[in-house]
Amino acid sequence: MDNEHKNNPLHAMTLEKILVYLVDYYGWEKLAEWIDIRCFMFEPSIKSSLKFLRKTPWARTKVENLYISTINISKKL
Image (cartoon, rainbow, N blue to C red; front, side, top):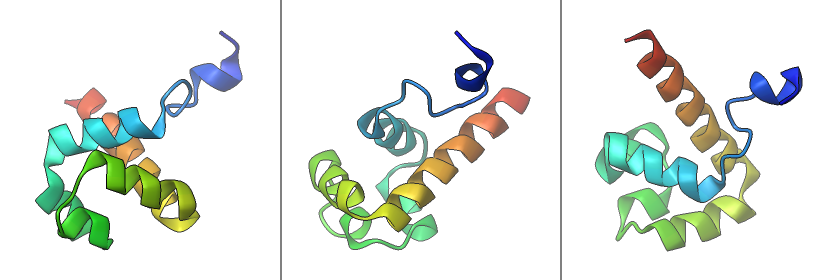
């Protein structure tokens, strides 16, 4: 593994893996508080959220940033 990938926490992580991790860690309700998107608030599901996030770069970026922050916090504990 080269240094570029070693330092990238999103390397080899699919959007689905990231979302499942965050839902397991925080739950839909907390995700909806932090990232204000309807697919997290009303009848949330992985499938509908992935569909939205794949089409909406700003929302995907927020989810990816929350994932990075979460794993960084978890490493410090």
